[in-house]
Length: 340
Image 1 (cartoon, rainbow, N blue to C red):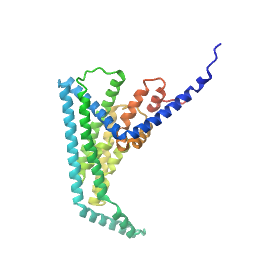
Image 2: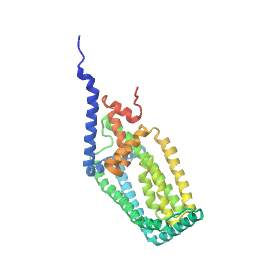
Image 3: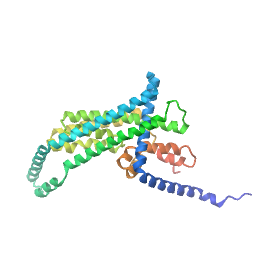
């Protein structure tokens, strides 16, 4: 009678320990190679979108594949250049109105102090004034705008890297391994939908902010487009970002209330109705897992990691599904892991 190897009962523990070590090593590798690897990953995603779009144009309109890739690259460069122009002009206009905004801020503060005295609420007026004066509002605006310009400039540089990837693809009909083809199909579909809904959100945000004559309409619209790639948290941040700007311009009046209501409605319709309808189940990731992975990738790669958290996690899930050993991890990411 064959006796069961006593080491077999420790096999699951060994597997878990190996996965923990592998995850730790991978995290250290991602952090250490952030400067080089992050642009490469972004370039790969851009290629996926361009490749899928070029293939669609070839099939639908008989556009040559290479011409389709060139068209996508030119559109990408044009949009990046336009975004840089919008951000730069918005910051210049906002900073030029610094005296007006300071006066309106003082008026609002005076109104708040008078209201507090009316209801017998004691406030240290001098402390509040000193605190507000210490807040570097305009430096913060310049810093955020400079970050956006730097981000978009990096995208332009990354597009040159994408061209080298294009040069290695002579035809869209190149046979791909099953896993690679599946990953490209699902990730490119997700990215194309997210690009479209993000542009919708940015466009309607721009219209709303133009309607209330916000000085940073262009910059805030660009930020809305970028932040919309961050699940759950991004739309909320992009909804609240215009409020301090409008407060500096108009104080506490109907402009803030109108913008807040309209922007909330826009993000609700786009995020909860249109995006849900077009994406269906999306990347088949559990919502709790999405939040956890968002935190993880944000810690590893910063804001860019947060933007790419969903597609990167989806790729990991698709790879895990291919092997019996890691299938439980794939089920965990999809929220299908049973503890029974």
